[in-house]
Each structure stands twice: as structure tokens, then as C-alpha cells.
Image 1 (tube, rainbow, N blue to C red):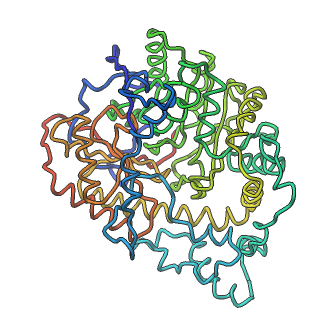
Image 2: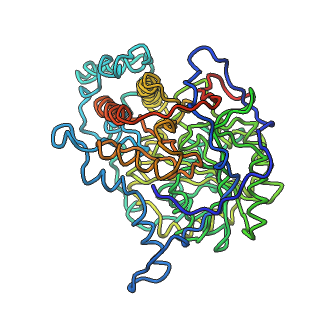
Image 3: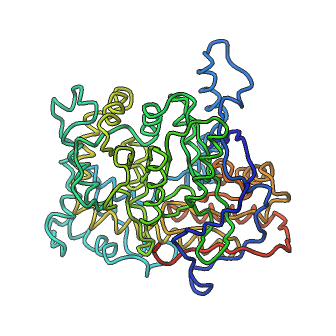
Length: 558
């Protein structure tokens, strides 16, 4: 992760979020988290900031163009912790004192399921037992599918598959000859939008899982090698150099790089804060008032805003926008003729049913369908971040064609396209094996980490979606500065555990960290032990300011 300089402006009017839809739960039961030790520093509550990546560049190489120097600067300044981790990566046998990575948002819980789906040689006996899947003492959290999957493995290997949920689901998911087919067409140049068979499968897949009111159309689908390429392509075809997108902050910081390196497009942060101002507000809540203020501020600085980026479920907050909120944000964008890029890369990683997630494609009416562009990928929901598969759905044919032209540089091989089509069409395996098991494991891992945080008296924000918890460590900072935040982050790294600090997400309150929990039992346990060691060695600040409350909503947004 990296940080960029921002032009900051004071908040000129109060923005309590009076139009908010979601109310907080009562102060009793599982939803209530520990109280915040301090109110946010009012000096930090700015309402927007315009990013200028090139302003940070202090030197250039004689061998590079000015553009090349900026690109190199991104590499030099970005992801220091990630590179350090790869030089000293934890391995239970080979490097037990290496760094545990709780900073990179990857799902490492279901490789066993995926390897059997894509490999014809993996033995069924490697299916974990119900006891092994109970994940640190939470066996009651596993659905019947988990115990059933483990119990039928010996029977399947004996050649007799009496499966109670139908003859096609598990056998077809584990009989892998369908993933290995090679045809001449797969080795030749494809349609740059993606092979038609894959785009048809993506349209059916998104129609089903996004619950679209009408079937989605293959001609509106473009396939690229991941959402990073999608952000880059969309920024390039939608904006002139120097123009900008609005984005609620904190946000996944790499988007800054995605939209800037090719398109020279900037981000205007819509700063959110943790303060809860009433029963109808929640921490880090996005409102239309905040969007309006940020847009007006950017316009007053002469910055042309061309669009709005929404991440739903949100990264790093794990927040979920209700259908009513989505409609309000889209109406705001229509009033100002802004494109809306909706990143739904975590849409199938909502492990709390009560969270009430809805895709933007499920809305009965999009206010401006020609300016609404939806992206999804297998990186998160299927734990395939190394495979590089992403897809765009847009009804704007001009946008789809322009993005497809860039697929010459960001396309997928024909073999990968074929495998993706086979995977996405296996609805039985996805619904009856993969998703129930994945959600159960995510929920168990989340429970383990959240219980650890509660035991330490650490507040956090979590909504039951994604792979991470947004953790409030402000009381461990001697001073409320980003310099102290980075020092605490380095102490974690020195103690061989990698987290992500809040400034990397453009959070305006120093002391927030993203902690990823979607990892195997032994790594998660050891990582949390190392986190605890660092925090127990840190002095805590006592603050007499009235506390705020960080809560974990238990019901869907109204």
C-alpha cells in the first residue's frame, strides 16, 4: 500500500448524515463493540481531498521519461511491507519465524475445495473432517454441507457415490476432465472482448448471483485480466488527463495507482469519519450530502469530476450499501452526469445472511444505465487472485468497445477463458459445496479474530462481509498523527506480522488498521499472538473525552 499527498480542506458545514437509512442496533447483545477511547480529532475531519501523485516525485532517472519516473515512483513508494513479507514469508516447516501476512486481502481458506475443482488428480481423502473444519473450537458454526462433504469422501473414493443432493453436484465438481480440454480456437487470437462462450456464461452467472430483474446480455460483457486492469481501462476511456473520480475514503488505496498510471486520472476523496452522531447513523457512513460537498469543493478548485467509484461490499470497512442508499448515490450521479463504477468483487463473500447485500444490478431501475458500469472478478470470491480474471458489465456499447480495445494488452489466454467458463457454469458445485463451505469458514475465522479483539478491549468495525476487520488502535498512538501510525505498523512488522495501516486507505483518522482474517488456523492464531505481543508492550492513552461507540450491525439495512 502507498499514500499520496492530498490537498485538504476544512469542513465548512456539519454533515451528520441525517438522510441515512441504516439505524444502529441496541446496546445489548452481540452487535455492540467496545467503546472508542477518544472522539476523532476535529482538526482531521476534512470533507474532501484532491490527489496529486506527481507532486510527491522528488527525483527522476535520466533513463526514463517523466511519465516513466512517476511510474517508478509508485513502485518504489508502494507496498514496502508486502515486499518485506515476500523476502521473509512464514512457512510452518521452512521458516516458522517468518512474517505472518494479515495485511493482504486474499482468501486462503478454501484452496482444498478449489484444487479439487480444477485438478483431476487431487484425492478426495484430503477433504477435511468436520473436526478439522471446526476452526479453533467453533464446530456449531459449520453448516450441514461441511460435515456431509467430509463424511462422503471415503465413500466416493470407494467408487459408490450415494449423494443426497443429486447425482451431478459433487461428482461433477470433483471429476475434473472438463477443465483440461484444449481446442485449436483456444490457442488462437480471440475476440478481444473475450470468447463468446465465456461472455455468455458470465452473463448467466451475474444474472443469477446479482439477482437481476431481467437476464443480462453477453454483448454487454467484457473480460479482462482482473479488476486492476478494469479500473485502468475505464479511467482511460472515460476521462481526459487530469480529470477525476469521486471515491469515498477510506478506500482500497491501490485504486489510486490503477486510474493514474495509464489515464493520468486523479481521485477526489470523500472523507468519512468514525463518529456516530445519532441513532440513524453508523461509523464511516457515506451520505449524498458528503458527495455533494466533495464535488462542489473539487469544482471550486478547477478539478473536473467525471465519475464516482463505489466498492460494495466496501474495502476496507466491509460496509454494505442498502438498495435505498445505492439508489440515492446513483441519483446523485445522474443529476451531475457522472459515470458510476461499481466494484462488487466481494459480492459472494458476504458470510452473514443478515447483512442484506444487494448488487446494483438487482435494482429494478438504474437511474442512468448508460453511465453505470459494474465490475466483478474471481480474485476474492473464489480465492483466485493469482489467476487474474475480471469482468465488466455495461450497457454503454461505446464504453464496452473502447475497453475491449484495451484488452489487447489485458486479455486472458484462451485456456484460462475455457476454465473460467467451466467453473462459472457449475452452479451445483458453487451453491452446494463451495459457497456454503466458504461462508462457514469465513464466519468461523471472523469469530475467532473478533473474539480476540474483544478480549483485548479493541474497538472495531465489521459488517459480516469481505476478509477483513477495520480495527481502531488509536489509543495505542502516543500522538494522533500518521507518523505514529506508521511507527506502530513498523513495530508489528518487526514482530513478524504484517497489517495494513489506515493512511494507505486515505483514512483521515490516524490509528485505524485493516486486519485480514481469511487465513488458515495456525497462521491466524500465531498472527494474533504477535499482534497481542506488540499491543501489550504499547502504553495506552487515557482520554476523558466522551466515548463514541463502534458497532457491528445485526440486521439488514432498511
